[in-house]
Image (cartoon, rainbow, N blue to C red; front, top):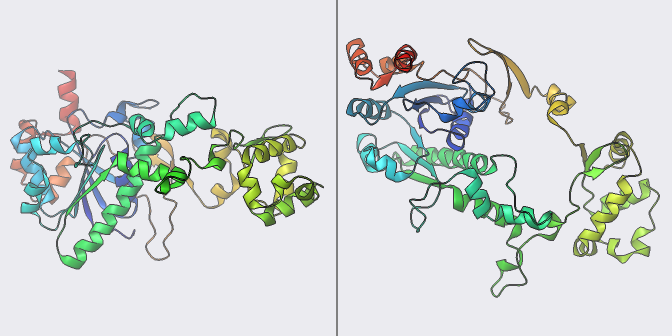
Length: 407
């Protein structure tokens, strides 16, 4: 029922950035055909898992898809892919463009077969620069996009990576928007096009939107960096028995907060707290004082006081407590589903809501190649042609994959 019902997507992506993007498109109703190499998506192997090839990260990035396993290095496998793409709306890949060129699956080849095709590439670097052929992973892009340097500045001086594949997911989300926008243009003009979504440029823009700072100007007005975000005390506040997340930001919020704790005189006695501009200019001292104040009450007391004073606040969740969050429970964010081989699974719904075409989970993450025969039948392949592809091992079905592995 989602807004993309009727859109057919050939998903040649693996690991996380591409699969995350195509899962969202599948949640929105698109028919996503996941094309896997004989070895399958490597995230299938990342534990924990109940069964081989069905690891948790794979399960959380590949619902609402069907899987076909093709050996694209074989001419018959490539030809099958071209036939699938002939009436597709979108082809998404996340290998380097040179690899697609070597496979004979470059944009020019696909556009000649299907001029309406949106040919979307998610890869490391824009193709007009010296990094064009370099491989890229989330860790590398975090470091290169200044993110690790910012963590060092805000912390103990040690550069680190965010403990989340944030580059993969930000670029994946960017790709969703780019693909949908290109589909709109295709429907207006009748022609598809090639759209590149590079990780490096996307993440540099994402990070420096906050931190370009004085380097925005020519000549520069000071250096880069947003002082509030880089303050070492910008973190969850420690309470007498835990932690609480709060942001006291505007003058109105500060007036309300200080009145609630009996410190209404502070802006007069200490000019650093007098107004927004002064607080930002002295943000380390401001956050440091807040850190001392918050240790004086319990987490429950603070959450009640902050709510009463209309101060933005949230509990600091861990893996266990977030599953019990009352808001997420009421909105049905976490759902349990019964997978035919993996048993009961907890999944997270797409957070976006539509009034008329709601997104929904219609397909659970597939085993490698489990839908291949059905997909080829839909594309017009005869039973004899499908059997020939399987005999050549250009098409791998679950049964043949198990036979090959056993041999």
